[in-house]
Length: 191
Image 1 (cartoon, rainbow, N blue to C red):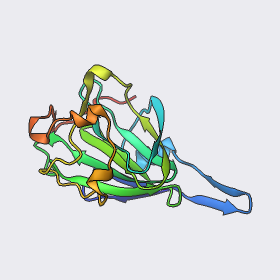
Image 2: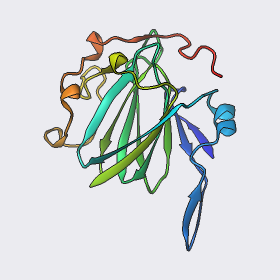
Image 3: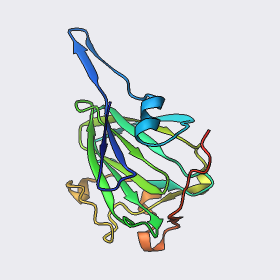
C-alpha cells in the first residue's frame, strides 16, 4: 500500500497493491496496522455502499460532533470525482478542497478526516461507491454544504444542468452559513 499526501495534509490518497493474473485480481483494501502507521489511529465502526448513475452528485455531507465521521472511500465499479472540503474554522486550509478521481481501474482510496465535508460526482454510467466510517450515522447531526458554493469553487468539470442532487442537497447551506468545526483535535482517544 502506498500513502500519498495531498495539498491538505490530513487528506490522504491510498493506492493498494493489486495482484492480477488470468483469474482476476486480489488486493487489500484496508490494513489497520499500515493505515495507523501512515495516517492516524482509527476505529472504523460501519461500512456503507451506494449505487448511483452518471451525473448524480452526493454531497457535500458531514456530521457534527459528537457524531463527526472520518471516511475511507473507494469505488468498486465505475468512476467518480471525489471531493473533501476543509470546514475547520481556524485551519490554514479552511475552505480549500482536494478532488481525486476514484475508479474501479485505479483502485485508489481517499481518507477524509473529521472536520471535512465530503461529496462525489458519478462520471461513469453507474458507480458503486463503498466507504468505512469511524462513527455511526446520526441524522440529527447530519449537515450539507452546497456543492456549487462559489466561495469554495469546486471544479466539477461536468455540465451543471446534468447534475442530479437530492432535495436535501438542494436545501444545503453555503459555507458562510453552515455549522462548522473548530480547528482542534476532533478524535479524542481512539481505542
